[in-house]
Structure formats: C-alpha cells, structure tokens
Length: 173
Image (cartoon, rainbow, N blue to C red):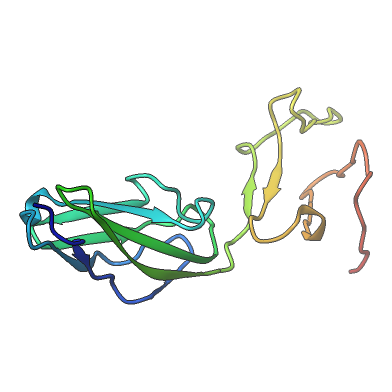
C-alpha cells in the first residue's frame, strides 16, 4: 500500500547583500507512511550563475521533520533566484516548495596591485612590465575597465608610458 505525497514547507522569501549568505533557514517535512528520517530532501537553484546547484551553495541540514537550508550566493553575484526544496518519500512520491532570494549589489572597492617599493640608480630607467616582473594592475568588479580613473605619480623623476592606446588624459594642477 502506498500513501500520498510527503509535505514540505518553505522558508519566507529572503533578501541578502552581495557576498553574504542567508541565515540558516528552518523548514519542515512530513509523510504519513515514511518516517521523517527516511525522507530525502534536495534543493535546486533557478539560476546556477547566482547560486550554483551544489552542496557548498545550497547547504541542507537538520534531522527528522525539522530541516534547514542556507543559501550561499556565488562571489559578486546579484539578482533574484528561486530555490526549490523537494522531499521524496520511500514510495518515490515527491513534493516541492519554493522561496526566493534577492541578492542586492554593493559597491566593491577597486583592487590595485603594485610591486613592493622599488629603487634604481640615477639616470637608470625603472621599467614596470610583465617582462620585468613589475606590473601594476587595477580592477573593479563593479565597472568596466574603460570607466576607471587611475592617477600615476612619480615623487622624483618622470613617468613615461610605453603606449597610450585606449587611455584618456585629463590635465590639471
């Protein structure tokens, strides 16, 4: 004799800030025929680019009827995702419940990578390039590289650029 579908509740819809996970969220499962400890629970994301469908990003826990889920968005991900919780009983009957997670963007600071302090002899150029192992890079995940403003200053001497392709210059004091 087989019974009906198992039951499952979902947590309330959630809002988190980029690079943060939800709290551990409670939900319940039940079935009239299969003991709660034998019910199988799974979770899937409607948008794996925001929340990948793996155990590191959809963290399930709990025992018996009292279960938990924690949603861990991908790094720098923003947007809306629907999480589907599914419970399966011993007769292979299933039921699902969903909740949404809204991931709000934050303005991440730019990352500037520079080599350690450098020195050179008088009248000897100091070249910053990949070939010399001395590179300077600037990145910002929130904007395109053609929208960044970078200022280079030499305390003594001059700054010479090997190429100016793709650069716009502002002059001032």
